[in-house]
Length: 503
Image 1 (cartoon, rainbow, N blue to C red):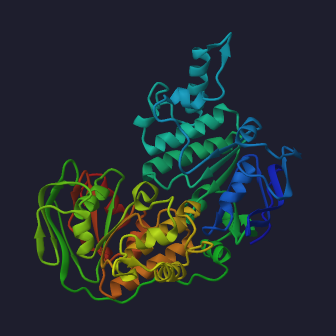
Image 2: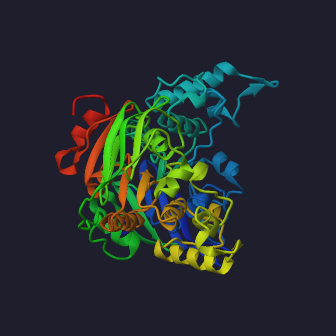
Image 3: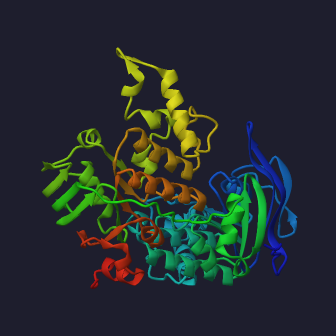
């Protein structure tokens, strides 16, 4: 991987940047730059330093060491607002829009045009419409409340806000993690428009296929250091993975031989209050059943109804030969069913509690005797799970809120394993996890199935469904297709089924 210097002088340049948080060295001499009219991807495992670097670039953190230049002048922003005023905008994975305000109000927030204290609405409207039109999205109404927009449209509004603020550098942090394929395509079009207008784009993603599609250059971070940089068209995905993890990843989707046994979970014409609609399937011991579909198709609602988080309006669930007309989370947990939510911060984890608490609170019995809880035995068990899933943390006492998104997801996954669930309902289990950690989780999921676990695997990412699952069903508008062997499906057939066409 060559040096990959930009064709033009950098808009923003960082050299030998270091940052520590207590005894933890987050960055240890990173160098990075972005030029006008390019998309520069920043990749690395969770904990490699990506978030720390872009927070320094966008003014959220101050570097301990190193120098930065913006347009050839020294650059050390006093905070995010100072960085934005100087032309550096950060668009986080979790958007910073105000849901109850309109598109226009969100775009102009903090940069209102006024005279004698009166907001100049006509000027606002013109700037907002111009920004949306330049991004190819004149269809988004300036008067629409942001809460009514899709996740993809909200990403466009964030990009329009950066454009209206005349940002020269725009940093996107995992922008497609919650987007449909169509919304992602629209966002890529907006990013290309910004690039063609001369902006420098910093793009963070765990999806290396996206890097190949959108980026001009790529820089790889590992353990707080920049370990390689080069032109994307001259660098293979395998080489990027090798730099990220410091070794070759021989097989991203490891296949562990397994055989299917008896049916342990089934649904018969299962309907929720709105979704799903008459869903039926069977799940066998040792089987990984993938469920594909577009966002809003009812995949999450199906898992929630199975686990008892949402009410069942009609139909039946069978768990280990017990037929249930309704389900409840405690009952399903006692029956060996575990649920991994796609919303890890909202309901999957208690982020203000420690790793140890999150791992063990759903199953404390092994650490109690005569009503007393053995804290030492519980802590030892938590440390074992931290080591087993390679969770990057100071220790098991660290608050989950302090972990990266990928490591938070590992904690949520470890909780299911700790409670000894052998029927796993996994909703987007690898969201926010780097490619090496994904390979580890794929291997773990395969090993669990080989030992007899039964797994439902919901994902919006077709390559992992094809790589991990034995059978695949597709959900469209709340209705679930028949499950067939993965080999019987193609991506084109999945998308035709997901969009309501014939399968």
